[in-house]
Image 1 (cartoon, one colour):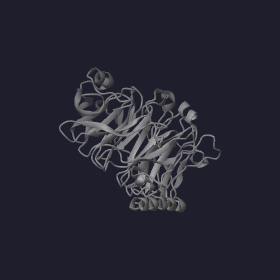
Image 2 (tube, rainbow, N blue to C red):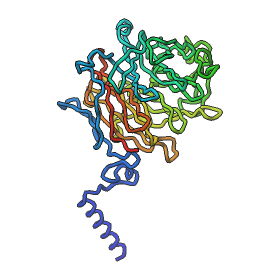
Image 3 (cartoon, rainbow, N blue to C red):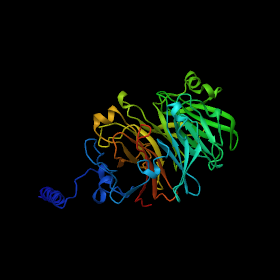
Amino acid sequence: MIKQSGYIKTIMFLVLMLIVGIPIISSADEREHRRGGVVDDLGFRPVEESNRCDQPMLRLKLPKGFKAEAIIDTTRPEQAGFATQADMNVLDPSERYLFQTHEIFDAALAATVPSVTRFDLHTGKYDVVATGFVATDGLKATPWGTLLVGEEYPGGGVWEILNPYATDVKIRRDGLGTFAHEGIVVLNNGVVYLADEDRAGAIYKFIPNTYGDLGSGSLYALKVKSGDTGVGEWVLITDPNNARAEAKSKGATGYYRPEDMELGPDNLIYIAVTGSASDKNYGRIMRLDDNGSKPVIQVFANGYYNEGKYEFTMPDNLVFDKKGNLYITEDPSGSFVTATNRANDVWVALPDNDGDGMSDGLYRFLSIESCGAEPSGILFDSTGKKLYMNILSGEPFERNATYVITGFHN
């Protein structure tokens, strides 16, 4: 009778849950479904589905309570002359000025389009900072007040903008390697981490001879002992202008299109390895610990389209919020987007609080409005309450926009 009574009580409890609309969930899913779907570690309910390409009048799809304002939109007559293909963003220390790179791969066209610009968030004034770069992509501020700009093509280099408030006060830093640059991380001690966006691209580290002077120093490539995760070592690159070939000849570990890089609040370096949907390599977020005697790299989050419920695919740009959550843009495009009938998304990965090396959860934050474009350049301000994001059209002189997204609660 005791067992029967307990069984009846259980059935009654389950029926009650169904009546009041409380989902029956496993303990593994409990975190996601608390308080009507709001994830406690995020403070909002994630977006469930991407925008679909066959839906008319698409709009930026955001969680409840969030708003997006376009501060730059090249379809506006007063902003039609702004540089096209805005990719990465950086705020100056006062947070008055937004610096942007502009990614034009055609060298002849790139010569006519500003490579780096400065937008005054107070007045709306728009100025050119640098010209003459090809496939301008990566952008990071240094602790000594300059900007580092990467060119994302095989012959690309890293340029240092010595005065971000003037025009064309720049110098190419050859010691940081010649390859397809996007990801750049600058530590407070002056060490610079970089990545080669090749299908077997290496991860690099540059140690300057003198703090704040990138004119001389040593370049190294990461070589993992077995596979592409685990304990590794740094191998010296003696000819930075031939870095890609030398890294391969010395057994440096290749990753499938490593792109953006970001320093986490845990002092570890996070790397978006984009992969390729056509090769069924859907990308990963790697985490590099270079704080010990040997570097250690591991997978932090996986990208598998249509496996599980997340549809997370081909990660590209990275930024952390105040809580240590990692926001990630994805960049599947072309035939893959057409085949899946969905726009690209921005995701958020929870920190590894359980210590297993992997994110504790991965959720969709937003879905962009255009199936022919990608989100890019995500960047939080110092308060963590404003997220800047570009919509990169993929075609020169098509619509480009920069949004400020609000609604975050720290």
